[in-house]
Length: 136
Image 1: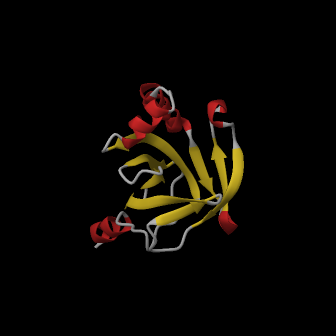
Image 2 (image 1 turned 90 degrees about the horizontal axis):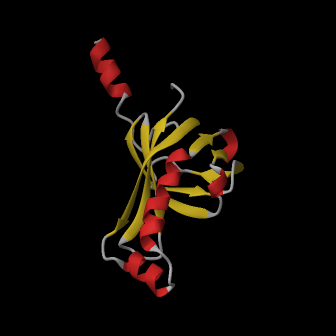
C-alpha cells in the first residue's frame, strides 16, 4: 500500500501542482523550427548565434512563487538582477501569467515544470525546464 501511495504523489498535473516554493531553471531550450527568429535577427543586423548561446544565462534564474500571486525572481545581473512581480495560474491551465505576460506552462512531475516563453513567431519559443529546490 505504501508504494502505491508514493507512486501517486509523484504524478502531478496542472490540476493539482503546488507552485508555492522555489524552482530553479536547470535547462533552457531555444526552438526555431522554421528559422523565422534567425531570419528576424539577421534582418535587424543582430547576431542570432550569440543570442542562441546567450539564452543559457536563464539557467541561473530561480523562481520563488509566494502566496497571493507574488513571484520573487532571482536573476543574474545580466538579466536585470533580482526582482519581484506578480503571477497568476489557474489549476488545469496550460498558461501562466508572469507580470503582464502570458507563458506556456506544463507539469512533468510534482518536482519538474516547464515555462515556455513565446516569440512573435509560432515556430519559435524558449522553454525553461524548472525543478523544485525546496521539498514539498
